[in-house]
Length: 520
Image (cartoon, rainbow, N blue to C red; front, side, top):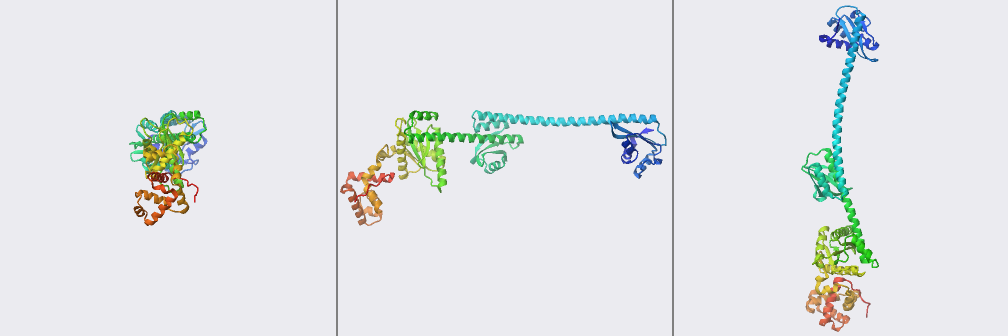
């Protein structure tokens, strides 16, 4: 007898696997040893050609099989065979059973060892994943802490870009929306993720559908998902910072506008309360200021566009006022500003600079009229209101003189400025001087005012006047005769002529004349 191994192991393995209802199957099913003295003469087995030929080729005759058991489970069969007919003794069967028990234990130990090794390998892989995830979490936590610290201490968008540059070991910049690559910026906004653009990465800084700008990571084409997420998180924090700054600025603009409205309108306000409110806004109402009236000159296609243009002008004026510790408010279709005058500065210089800066900000011409310098704004309740009225007269003068988009003050208009400044009764002067002619033209639809303008412009020559008006000289004479009856026979005297010319100019500039009651 001998245990099958070595050269016959492969064939015996084939025999064992293919026995079906044979000896191996019986042993496995009953968990008891089975033995045959002569395999070919034993009818307990279902003989098959493949098994029989294999047994015959090996010259096997007597076969003994004992179960390999672990507890109540049979995990296999240990076979012994002989090439002659024989009877296996009880001791031999017991010995093979002992071998089977040892083999089962060895197999179990080997299986456990393999499972242990597999488990250890799995644990090592899990540990690597945990360590990798831990590093990721630690990096994400570090980025979160840095960004949170920036927000809490009032950092700006460029501080966020600097912090992310350090974390990503690269160069991150905040770029305004118009300066960023349009296609990549729109793709990032639509997808909600950073996108690659050449050697750079673009992360849109957006609020809803509004693009506020972008964070651009320069020269860093290889970006792992964690770093990409870091860039995206920084873009989100940047958008929150921008929205917070905008909200704060809009709130301050409203507060500044309300204070200026009260200075213009609420003459019964307590000066101490007004001063306290101004102090909180860092505005010194005791300093010398100029009141400026600003208006857009670009034509709007419709009411919505005009309203949007006015909002843009107010926003630009409010920002300018805040940077100069002044005030701004929307009023009369334009904007009014109260700005301090620096030492050595003039109201005209301030008006011109303001016109340029506002025009640049809104990309349209802006005309600015300024009052004369005023100090101690709370000394009289109507100080600011009077200065604003003067600024508006200067604004209207600039526009009627063809200087739209420019800035000036009453001091810039010479003798005409004396009439524009302060509280001159311009309307009364015009009414007293040429009011009857104005009223006659309005009632009759005539052109006496136009004829007077041309007459004085042509050196008081009727012949040149008729050429300028393209009418007959007799028509000029008739109109001048009517003017004489309305204004008096001395209307062409040097003193009266000067007053009439000045009244005609003021009438064109201000448009404030109200016709007196009709006289017949």
